[in-house]
Image (cartoon, rainbow, N blue to C red):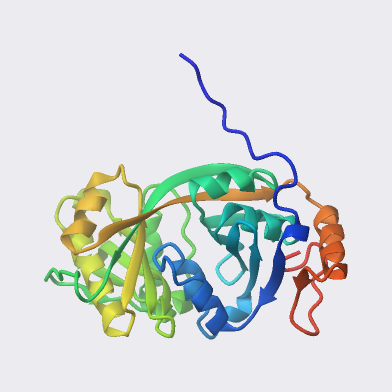
Length: 308
C-alpha cells in the first residue's frame, strides 16, 4: 500500500508582489467580502458587531487567484479565521501571520495546505458547519430556563464534570444566550452561543453539553432548540453551529431542529514558524514600498504586536 504524504505548496506562489493587500476596518466592505458563504464565515461576520470589531484585525488580498480574507481576533482569546482563495490567504499571512500562537477556528482543507508554509499546525479537527433559519427551524418544546451570570458556578461545574477545566465568567453568560435544564438545583444540560451579531444577522451556537447520566433523554435537543429560537427572535437570520460529522447523536439532534449541512471546515492550533516576526516585517515594508500593501491612516503594526 502506498501512502501519500501531504506537503505544503512550494515556491513563492503567493508573493505580496502579486496581490493587493489592505487592512480594512469598514464593516460594510468586510460583510460584502464575507457574504459568499455566510455559514463558513460566521465567526468573522460576528466580529463585525460593535464591541467586537475593535478586537479584530481584518486583511483583504486581491490577485491572480482571486480574493482572500484573514481575521486575527483577540476578543475571545487569540483566534484566526481564513476565508477565500488559499494563495490570497498565503499572501496575507506572508506579511501578517498574526499572534505567535492562535486558535484557527475556520479554514478549509485546501487552505490548511498553504498555512503549513507559515505555521506549525496541531490538533486538527475536521468538522462541518450546519445552519438553520426561520424557514427550516423546527422548535422542540420542553422545560428549559434562560441562564444568567448567577448560574456560572453550576455551569462551570457541568462543563468540568468530565475532568477538563472550565472558567466561564458571569459577565460572559450575561452577554451571551444560554439555556439549561435543571434537575432540582443541579444543572443537567446546557447550550449557549459563541457569537451573537444582530447587525450582521448571524449567530453561532455552541457549548452544547449534557451530564453523562442524563444523556439520551433529549435534553440537548431542548436546550439547543431554546437557544436557536432566542437567536432567531433577536433578528439573526442565520444560526450556525459546528459539528463533528462522525458524532451521529449530535448530528441527529441538529437535523431534528432543522439544521442542514454546509461547508467542511478545519479547526486547529497554529504556531508561527517565524517566531520573531522578522520575515513578515521585512516583507510588509517591501510591499508598502511597492504600493501593494495599504493600511488605515495612522496605523503602524509592529512585529509581535496585535496582527504582527
